[in-house]
Image (cartoon, rainbow, N blue to C red; front, side, top):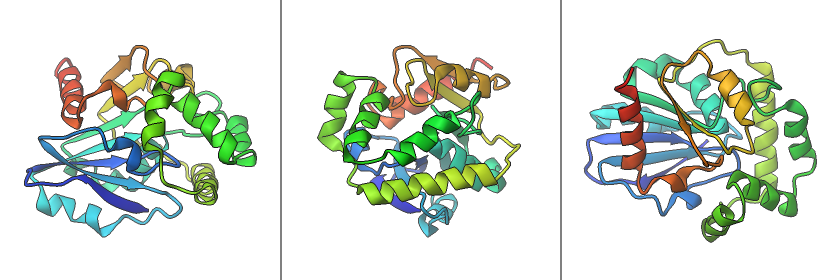
Length: 230
């Protein structure tokens, strides 16, 4: 697993962001942060926790876990023992059953993505991920700087990880679901989080939903506001 600082200053609060498959920090460069430092993890070809992550709790008064897409599964598996150390734990457009006909990405679609992955089909994936041409046009300005071989290896590792590890716990206290998600079917997202209390359903929002906020501060504020209702 790789890690990279998106924002780092003298803040007392930090967001540990667990990215989705195939990505890196590049698509997130335009999202600012004033109140939080942001450390991003990505590339799950191995899931060894980086030393930078282990040091976060020593260096910050508050550490918030934010996980997106397949990062939701990875973070839930890795940080179960640390869940009480995080000030909040937020899942975005992902599930604890990442490959599943009812509560995740259908297995046939996941396998088909692996089998057909190339430079042309991944552009189609990004297009769906961004909810169409408008979002993709913006995403294209900051495409992940990954090669297709790495991305395919990562997808195969994630498939094996999900299929070989039964997980019956949930570290998250808040969940954000995009109603226009074309990667995780929205019905499956709803099924997966049916017993969750603090759910924010975002209208007209695709799988890659980060253009919905001007900053990480806005994202965190929306989650805090929703949590206060429960």
